[in-house]
Image (cartoon, rainbow, N blue to C red):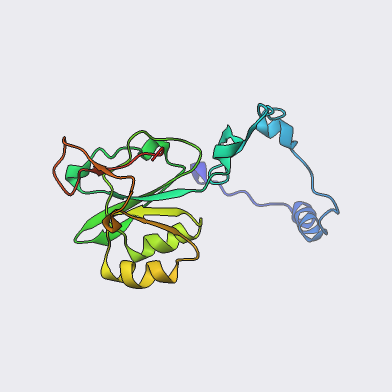
Length: 189
């Protein structure tokens, strides 16, 4: 205590404290603030044709708010920075891949990105995370375990979009970075 003084409660104060502590809680809790006071009033209604996005709750055109999520593997190598598209993602995962490097998985839904990249390869954990959204899973190749075990096992829960499979994959190479950090895509393709 300040100044070295100690305060002791009187016997009647101790009895009062004990009685209030042992009293049963009231049937209805005391409400300090109503929900509208906490939120600052009623929420503003969304414009016609708009909804809250499934992944992050942001307002968007209804078609985009409920669109198929796209989970895209992105490099976190020092020469891959700055990555493109990260600010438009609804959810971003970052986790260890191997060799002392992390990878990103950007999950897009209601916002469109004109450039997303650099696109990199699949890893098992990311495939499982993409399966939680039943997302299109975009990557270029992957670890043997991801490609030959996890992706086939999750085939009912992801839409695999592997650039290494060829065909009409929606990837392109840019000229301002060296391979393998130069593969990009976008929301439209």
